[in-house]
Length: 102
Length: 314
Image (tube, rainbow over all chains, first blue to last red; front, side):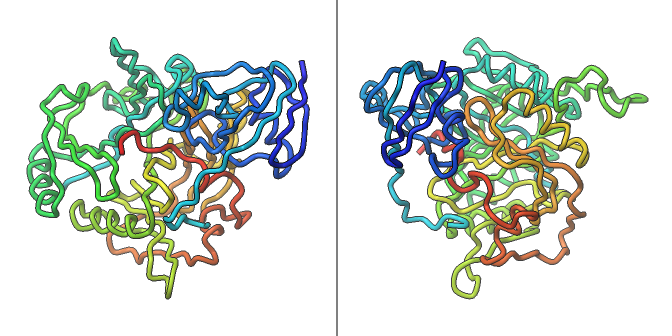
């Protein structure tokens, strides 16, 4: 089953299948989602789900608190679409530390 | 003689059974111990100590600690004095507190990572034995990783990289093999590679926004094994970060990929070069940094700086 996923901050939408997590589906499109680990550790794919239903795997508490999880703030790599959805990526606050290659 | 090599990595994972299946069937490790709380201990076929990887079921996918093995138990007493004279408090964990290990010297690195040293871990032996051994185990699974080769730890900023690098050189007698120098006149080390053996690195440090673990690496023989490993990953939908490639730094043949909790792993193949204490330090400049990291493309082509495992402890 395929559902239409709108990435609001890019104003682009793509079909995603229910058997793949959103990061695995959306990362096949150029410059749509941030690059990350696709399995929970890095937390780069933190999103707020504005609308739509989804199945989810366990979130990494280092990045997603219980309160956030109950407010539909999740990691895109740990959810699977069950309907059309609108999502929005939440960027990490800028660091004051020099990062290699940045 | 002090530190010989990396001993084990200790991580938290989100789904322990998924991790068990992944490390057994894809990486080719063996579970050698299971605790009642679900913690799993793994060993590679070419290693002889009881385990080299500890995975703990958790609500976090985070880095707990890394342990290195010293040659003699008395080394621990000498190192305790040196570390405390440097200004870092240490404490001994009694034999058996760390599973299957003798007494363990525990402390925090200047970079904030929990670090442990031990001289004894229970012996199991290589899967191929030590009498007239086969060159590799016929019954092994998946990639058949030889051993855990090194870890790369992320430090907050170049100052932290420089401090922990100096600590490893002064206290542990490691040799600096390579460095990335940035800033005015290249005066800041933004990344360093250090060895205590003859391989290009036994540990590495990179400057980033937060303290954590960038990756740890499994050793493979050579380029054909890297190709086969990437095939195995493709067969199992493993998320690959960077496909088979050469590192300029260390000359390693590499794949970066992720485990089921998102911890970055590497398959590192080849000797690289013979590292010796009197080898001139290799320097990579800021403008050729990505050539150093990914030699063929010369650009970042993965999630090298954005994605990594954070420290479990603040």
